[in-house]
Picture 1 (cartoon, rainbow, N blue to C red):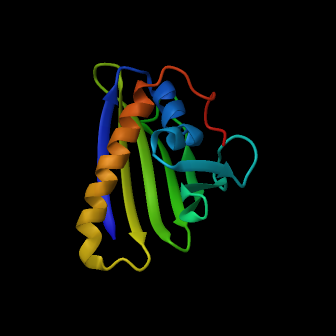
Picture 2: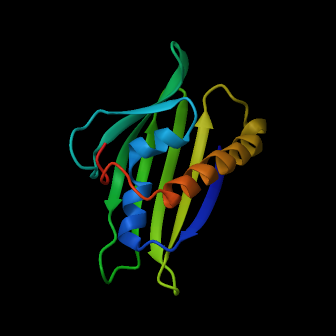
Picture 3: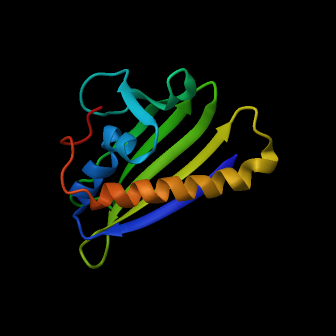
Length: 155
């Protein structure tokens, strides 16, 4: 499996950074040829499910995910954490997002992901991890630069 980690800092507060990085539809605006649809209505919580579809027309693949850990940041707690399990036929693995306050009063966001594409030989894991760092590094930077969003962690 390709494993990668991306870290970014923002002057935004922890709650705002959390809102930005858990705005699933905003992710789709930053990842080319991707759209997100919800399988669970309402605000994101443990048990929420959604699918990222990447491709054009019939040519593409679905990346269905379920939120298995949902701990928004709260005053007095070290970090907010979200863990997604990828439950697709093509894409499997998990992603974990953590937000924590920095000494300067901003926020450090860490995105760690283990991803596997069925049918892709393990010899490609390093390339898959490198591509993940590039794509998610750019997406995370874009999410943290955003000044407005859809309003939070709903899908």
